[in-house]
Image 1: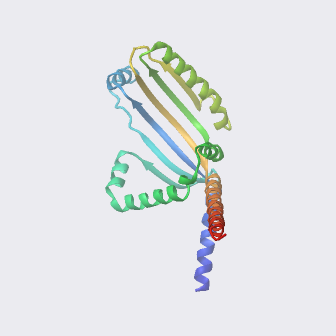
Image 2: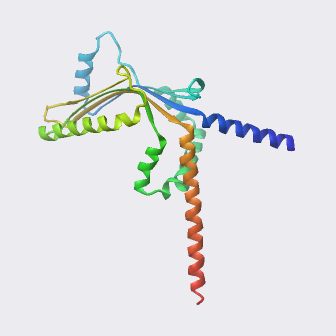
Length: 229
C-alpha cells in the first residue's frame, strides 16, 4: 500500500514539474468573421482565385515541454466540435468543471482584478496576421474607430512580443466608407501561455478565497459574540 501511494505521489510530482516547464501554444488559422454576407463575398472574390475554395477555420492546441518537445496536440475544427457536442458525458463533465471554477474562483473576483489576471498570464504572440475592415453609418465615427484601434494595437503589441520579426507580425485596419455598419475580421495568430503562470494565478485565487472565508467566519463569530453582550 505504501509503495502504491509513493508511486502515485511521484507521478503527480512529475506531472506538476513537466507542466510547470511547459507552454500552451494556440494556433489560430483562417479565422474570419463578417456581419454582412454581400460585402464578405465581394471581398472574397476579389482576394482569391475562383478555382480555390475558401479555407475553413483551423485551431490547434499544443503543449510544448521547454518549448522544444511537443507532448500534446489537438486540432479543433467544426467536425470535432460537433462530435464533442454530441457526447453528453463530456458536456456534463465540462459543465461541472466550469461551474466549479466559476463558483470557487471567478465569482469572488472584482472587475479590476480581471485585468491583473490578464497581465499576470504574460501572454506572448509569436505570430500575428490581422486584417480588420470596419465601417459605420457616420464617416467621422468610422475614422475615429480606425484611429483608436490602430493606436491601441501599436501600444499593446510590443508588450506581447518578445522577439520581433517583420515577417511574423502584420496588421492593418481599413475603414469602409459605405454608410453602413459593417465589419470583417481576418486573423491568423499563435498565442503562447506558460503553464507556470496559470498555476500561480489559480493558487493565488484559491489562497485569497481561503483568506476571505476565514475573515468571513471571524466576522460572523464577532457578531455572534456581540449578540450576547
